[in-house]
Length: 206
Image 1 (cartoon, rainbow, N blue to C red):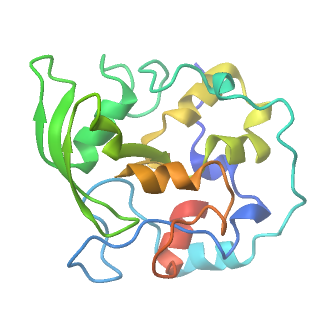
Image 2 (cartoon, rainbow, N blue to C red):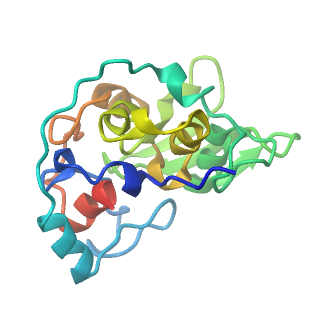
């Protein structure tokens, strides 16, 4: 069995230095409070020191990159958290990050819920449907293309599948904002909004 490869192990490269971005605190919470859902940002002094000491490396080309290199989208295969439960990763993340979740009789498909978006601060009423599902998308906090540049090209197919479905690197977010981010590196990939705090930068690099 291949070891779990976290987002952290792949992206401790110069592209994720101090300009990195991450989700905003939940509406109504203190700036330093941990989010109610989803991965939690690191916040100790040691992590900040490591972030500030990251060396900036040369930009690596995307030669050979394709989405297919990371396996089928939202695959339930692999050996990361949430895998192997007969539920696609997208549904697992929706169920984790939304409030007031209603699931279908299959116990998997999320039919509706409420997202308090960490990037935009918006509250989004999610309803599954052909014209509505993409109002909430699942963001790879560290995009797959950036992961490829930062070392994923050297991984096995199984390790890349794990990386693409690692819940520590996934966050439900506003669809148009996520679509606008694309595969960019920080700071160009940061959604518009208040300047990221040290905690949210760590979220992207740790």
